[in-house]
Image 1 (cartoon, rainbow, N blue to C red):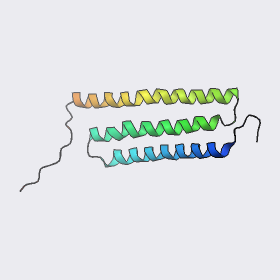
Image 2: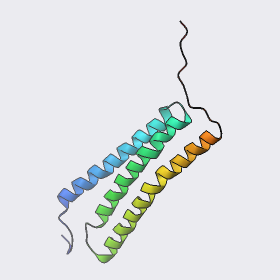
Image 3: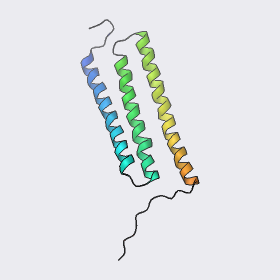
Image 4: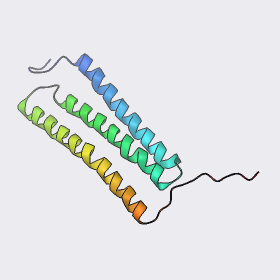
Length: 117
């Protein structure tokens, strides 16, 4: 073990769980974008699940970076977390702006057709 290195078995498990969870959120968002019927419902997984996946994956990367503790690794982890904060605020805001543009353009939401008796 290198000087300054945190014992890694428990931390490695946390990092792997966070990364796999982030990938599952990305996968769910991708499936939602492909499978849902219209513009508005497709933007929901794009805004929510992709943001959650990004936050989990980047937080796992930040934890992985600080396993060997040094000033440079700490600075890198802080930069990664600043990216997470930036995406956490801008992704939902951008999704809202896109939905607002669709409403202003007159795009109608999908409705289920009524079956004839």
